[in-house]
Structures are given as C-alpha cells and as structure tokens.
Image (cartoon, rainbow, N blue to C red; front, top):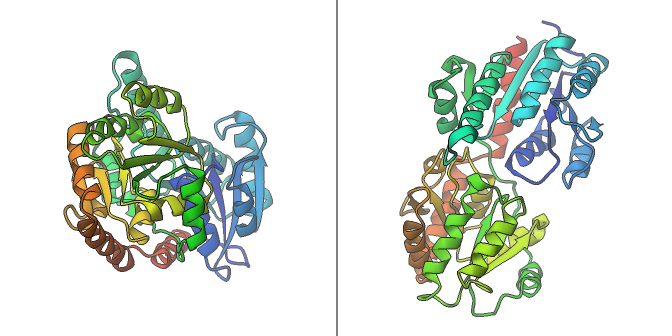
Length: 386
C-alpha cells in the first residue's frame, strides 16, 4: 500500500476543542508524533480553549463552523479534506467523531481508519425508562459504526473488555489494541501559582483542600461527592472540596451544596486554565474522582504525577491506575458513605497522604509513558499500512 512521500499522513478527527481527557490525548499525539514518519492534520470545531494548541501542533487544522461531525455537510467536508491532503490514516476520537470520521473516510476511500476509545460510550448507569432504552440504542448504533474502522485503540483493559463483551454489537477482540496514555512531562507548579490559586478561590491558610477535576456531567458522580462532604464537614470543618470544571450539572450541584449547608466547604471553581488547575491540585491533600464509569482519567494521571494520592470510585479502568491502599483509596461507585470515609482517612492524616502521593508518582514514572504511547501509535499506523 502506497504511503505519501513525507511519511504517513494522518487526519485526526475530534468533535471538541474543550479541555477534557480525549482532547488531551489527541493533543499529546499531535505534539509527540515523529515528523520524519508521521505528518498530522486535524479537523475540529471552530472554537474552544484547545484550538490554538491544536493549530501549533498540527501541519494544518480545518475547523467545522458550528456543526457536529455527524452533520452530512461535515462528513462531506471531511471526505474532501481526506482527498485534498492525500490522507493515509483517519484517526477519530469521541463518538460523534468516530461515526462522522468513519463515514467520511469510507466515502473518500482513505486507506485505513483508527478510532481511539477513551471511555465506555453510552454506558448505562442510573438511567431508567425511555432514557435507559435510548442509551442502549445509541450504544448499539455506535458499536455498529466501529465495525467500519480497521483498528480500535482502547485506553485501558476495561475499555477493551467493554467493547468486546457488552451485550449488543460486540467488537472482535483482535481488532482492539490497548494503548495507555500518560500525563504531560514537566507538570511542576511555580510557587506563585499556588498562592494565586489560594487567593483566587478564597481558601484559608489552614484549609485542608481536596479537589475534583472533571466536567460537571452526571456520569462523573459529583452528587455523591457533595453528599459525602456533608458527612465529612461536621468532623473536619477545615476540609474544603474544590470542584474544577463546568457543565450542565453545575446548577443542581450548587443547589444541593447550599441545601446541605456546605457553603464555603464545596467551592465551584468553574473551568480553569492549566496553570490554575495544577496549582489547586498541588494545594490538595488528595484528588477525588467519584465517576460511575471511566476509561483512564487524565485528571488522576496528572494528580499522581504531581505526587498526590487519589480517591476514586472503583469503576471502569480506575483499578488499572490506582493501587488501593498504596497510591490512593478505591471505593464502591455511588456510595457517599464510603467516599466520606476515604476522604476522612486522607484528610486527617497528612503523613499517610504524603506516602501514598509519592507511591503514586513512582507508579506514573514506571508504568505510564507518553513516549511509549507515541511509539506504539506510530507503529500501529505503519503496521496497518504495511
């Protein structure tokens, strides 16, 4: 199979320029892929905090003006770009991008298509009735679309098992390659940023800070964290939990925190830039993620790289990242009492928190490598193209 003279030309298709885990993974690949072997291009939305970083890292970026990758116009635009740029591999990430990108690749006759699966798409958790049925149908639809890809990259063994074993349109296991992602190198936080974060968020000098970094959407389980903080507050009045991120659940979570008397003990920081986010993590005694489902969360990778212990719901790929009682604490999903107990354990024992944090940093250094991720993805492209 012929490859372009400049090396393998790869078109990344991602239907988001926000600051989530999927966007981080794609940006890491854009930054890290060896230009002597891979020439990266990108299709993404026309606005978002990651857009400029995408533009700096890719050979060329095409923006979708106000349209999803699922719109017929977007699919035809992507197909046209595949032909114009003589793309060898189309690499999609996020479910709307997967469907739109796969269709565009097949219309344009792209040699190979890779879909990068960062989470358990349309995983049914607490939905009931018609909403539950809708999610099951969407899960079936997207899994059928994956059959149009030549290879799937799963970010964890849990995601691979989900793709291959969940009832419905199962994906053949031999079509799935597990490639873990990793945090960025050089996450050190300047001392001035830590103090700026404390002042900006109104955190007292004696506050015992916990943080949670995630979009405020139902599957991230923030409501259980707010409920847990209501149990923690009477025993640890200096404990403050900072929620970093924004989303459709924010209003409901703010009302819940107010009704539970947690004004000042649950702080909604909103969407933060990278420096402020890392500064809050650096301030934290522990980082919490109570998600009902996860692939391999970037927020916890970064927290562990910064030497912070983590408290996480034992769902999806969490157990592949967090060594329970060693680098942090795992609790059952949707269990505020267990979450409160774990928070009390680390918030009240700074020495234990420090030991777990250092163990977590060593685990990241030993087992999660951006360089290895890039090398394995490059080899996958070249293997597919022969």
